[in-house]
Image (cartoon, rainbow, N blue to C red; front, side):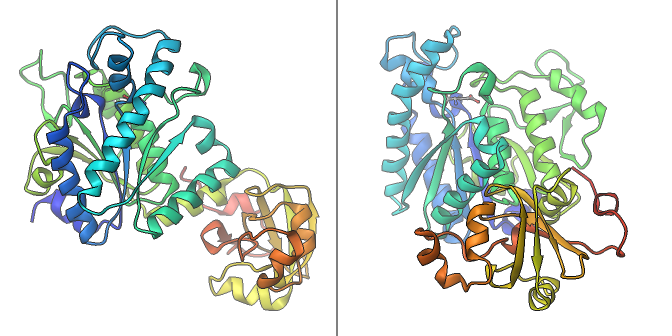
Length: 393
Ligand code: GLU
């Protein structure tokens, strides 16, 4: 079995990013045969039980043609407002194409447009994540792009490589594949340097590796090797494997499994660990929850924190903020991301989860802190939390 095949064999959640030049021809039309072949690849992987999220570039490349702004991804740069108008026009066509093509395989599609804020702000991050998880749970393939028509320069990723990495981190993906027009990372630009060596595997993001970003510049969209290495740093920090692979030919995911050359960035830790490290490494708690002995025992067994076991809420915090969990004797037990703000929390503590809707007038999460958003404190009493948790992010 090839390395790529064995990586995909052990993948539960896959993010696939598609560069503009793969999806959109030079004249600005969608490459429908290519898209159809990729859809067949995706259907095959879905049938094996993988959750798949697609990050699709190409809105601007498609939209500029529709608006008569010189067609295709390889033409002159657009002014920001032109690019935003093109994105708004192209995104409908792009989403439609994905919907039609995946419908051939009875795969429902959902469109999610994100801005930088949606991943940097914890509350919005949690919201976006929960939508994405709900869709995946329903067997839907989310098709994600940056919300280019509203994102201004200061608040945009600007390239879908980083967006793909952030989404992979958000949903706890174990593999992220960037399909582009080159088969991976080279030690130098292979177009001008005959001695350029292909790098098959990276396990540590060293300055030497980062220096290779000056190499070949992909013609597609706004990315290049540089943004792909930034993406790799993000996925490696999140415990997610990332591949840079050539998507020019039909059925690129099949070709990859069959042994096509690519570069794999292989992290040293599991996604859950990295995520929990992020929680543990966070600088400050916005509030404190005091819990009863039953809840303390449940936490120790890896359970979520339910409102019923909480005795007291202190501090001011919003949904998604970091809070400390302490026992009645003030011992620090855990820390995690609150699913409710302090005001709502004060109303639901001591109550069963099925009473939440009646108390608050809306149906939120059953847990005050879900176990995925919770890190236990496993240090001796008296020691500072921050100093004793691993801080690898
Ligand atoms: N979001 C842009 C688009 O859909 C593409 C950005 C990129 O190429 O990385 O046109």
